[in-house]
Length: 242
Image (tube, rainbow, N blue to C red; front, side, top):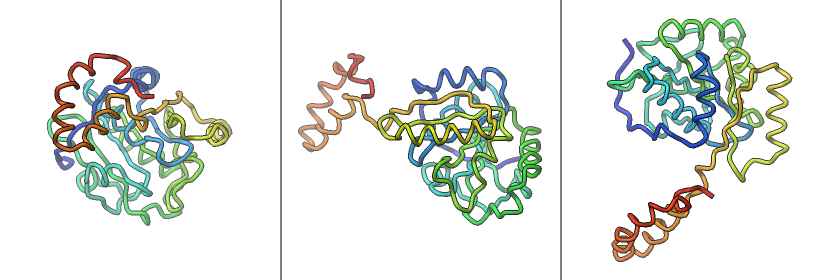
């Protein structure tokens, strides 16, 4: 029995996730990898949202984190890490299950936990097969393609063992050349690219920006905001990211 943990959930619904969910989870793809061209594109947030949505639909879902550079599960959700290796996975020791849900997490190990001898295709395949005995869906939060973790498993190598791969792109951030390089890597390795998610969450809606500005005014600003916010929230252009 994996360990239980209480985690505050993120919203399940993101505008850009519905299509990807339909192309992957809804089509019974049991292994899905999320990556990006560069760092800071929001891969972890999107992967987490998809994992939540899948678990809410009744699927036993495991979110595996391979990004040791800036771990989401340890940094944001504050799950402790261990020195797990793909050839020495222990469900009881390494995996956390959110209390009352079908969602489980395998936080990224310490940076030294992916030695060269564990980066063999057969080891990756055996580890995934083992996870699929206990879970209906395995989602990987993988490092970016163009600036990979030096001590990690190359994302292109990982993706070769997943049923589908999703590329996350941050709007107005990543250059077209970098995206092209990432896609070229996946195509050259004959990876099944399910699609791309345009992540505009780093660009706040007008509503959020106004809220931030009113908050700067202190108590008076927050009081005024509390009066006008309910009306402003009803306007669709206020909550669309730009």
